[in-house]
Image 1 (cartoon, each protein chain N blue to C red):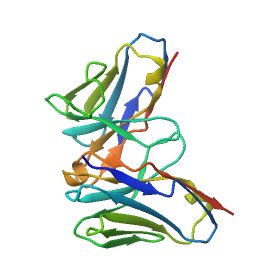
Image 2: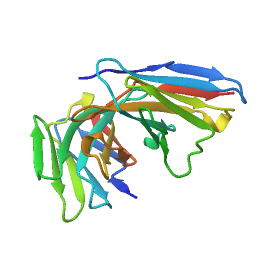
Image 3: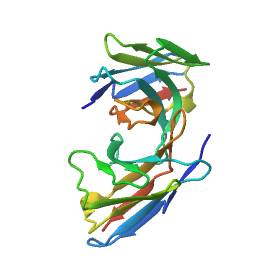
Image 4: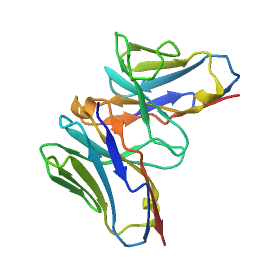
Length: 114
Length: 113
């Protein structure tokens, strides 16, 4: 089955710096790659997603890149702010696109220091 | 975005009792819902896929007789943890498939004493 690896597990940056989180997946059939932000005790919130027919997607300070050949995708956050501090999870769906079951990475705890 | 609710948000029970958790899609119909479990400081682990009108599909290592799932309507899926034990204490989160993304419920914190 699908396996998603996520690095780093923790990331600390200064306010205003950029943060990059990387994930790899194993199943070449996976075609939908969302990123979630989760604050302590709360539900995951979708922040950006990308489908396998696109190589890059950007939404204001957040961007995601996908390399299908290498089977990895990355989250880029620019001009980080203290409110960006949270745990971020990548995920992949081996089938069914955005309606399929999500296989999550282990998460990255991002700390943005003011 | 679409709204998914869960009830209860928090439950404390004695070891050996059963606990039912409800997951509802409030403003859309969901033929497929998913149940995840999240232990402290860990990731979300998929437990099962709940399909309306049919049996749930369980992930490897998840006991179907212990975690009973019923998806009786297009807006409601329930997870029953039977004969709960302290090791079942966790954060249980459901999600429902929309047209372009999945929507997560707020989660249920289960504590088994």
